[in-house]
Length: 354
Image 1 (cartoon, one colour):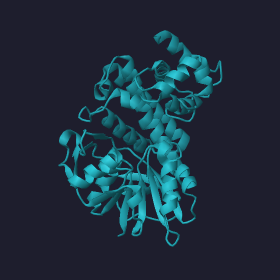
Image 2: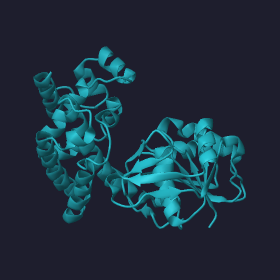
Image 3: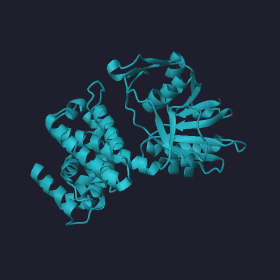
Image 4: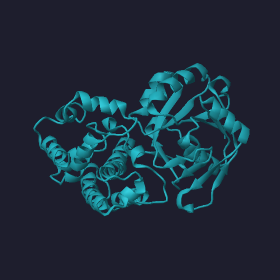
């Protein structure tokens, strides 16, 4: 097997993707623009991945090298994982375009839950001998302030099979999935919607610890109500097996209510302006639920609290809130028609809870 390259040695790059590569017994080249991180990882030569709740023994990852872009070597690389924040994908693409050779084909998988990351990266690379797929990251990873990572014990990286153009990675934990668009929607409307319910309703009740918010009795009752409704409508909309969807949702619930997974409300609630988009995790499932005549009240309440949300570091959201009325945000960002049922429902909860 050729060398695996992981671009981005942050918590996902080394704590999840890197851990999966270590479990598969393959050598990894990390590339990161953070010179301090490169020096620290080079000097220590290893890092540990510890698992929440000690559900399994820690893994020590040591079969790697790490470098910056100037010294990156793609001569023996076929499969590349890119684990950087969405806004950095264009820069990564520009760097790859300068360094990838024309005499071989490269397969790249983005590992970032952004909007159409594979297209953004492929457009930036703009080379015919590069296939760019995208994965959805279910695994929660938290840096401990050092090189070590605290991680959920999640075993797979699911990615878009079609975008790999027939290529099947030799890493068994990397799972190409057919009809990946529907799979992403399923994840967004199940996992991400639930995460928002917990984070924003938890913030409204004064929680800072995510696990504590997830185990609040009132929030859990609303969460379970929304799971039940969402499961039903997703099966109608996309033809999912009812039992399979119920198990999928239960994995989500178990993850979020696990208090050994150390997380914060603030991390899960950041950037509400992005999460309030029409096709995103709150308005998107709300529209599907309403389409089938089901109760949208839990998501309406969540959206209302999102419109109230404030926290340090949310300058962009603060500017949006200060320069637009609540109704204008519902129209411009959420894509809801003024006076529509969902528009009025969210406003009613907003005025009541304000």
